Length: 214
Image (tube, rainbow, N blue to C red; front, side, top):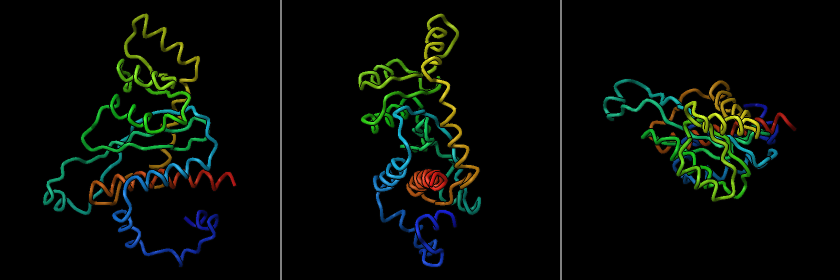
């Protein structure tokens, strides 16, 4: 990305070989990559109002022979993102292969960032009474869409729309932007590298947003 190199004062010829960078995914633990994502998000305005959303990213491989040899049948990785609704900066990402339900993955991401949050909006895939009470106990407003058409669900959904639930589309926009402008499929072969690659994709997306504002 020449525009990023220009902003950072780097020359493309001085950058390390792609193979060297690929092996750096092994040298640094996951918390280092999460810290990079967090720092990149902090360079953009933070409102404290965030949106939860989940997306699936393809696990692209070299050949069907490789997939059969390693016994890999899972074709996608699920990524749950926490996106600021003002700047569209991604604050955190939770990755899993075992199809962890949104009601478990969502609150886990919220807990990791609870000190900086004021409200969280999410669709009905994240709706669970126990998780809702847990998040409310952290003094974070949990605006989650209820399932069904009962009077209680209808009243709750009308209330959260008035409080800003319509900003949830921000998270979907960010996921779509990453897939369109950077990568719709992962290149790494091992699952732990793929997790780190996903975090890096969203960190680069934050950096690109910052470059456009400068």
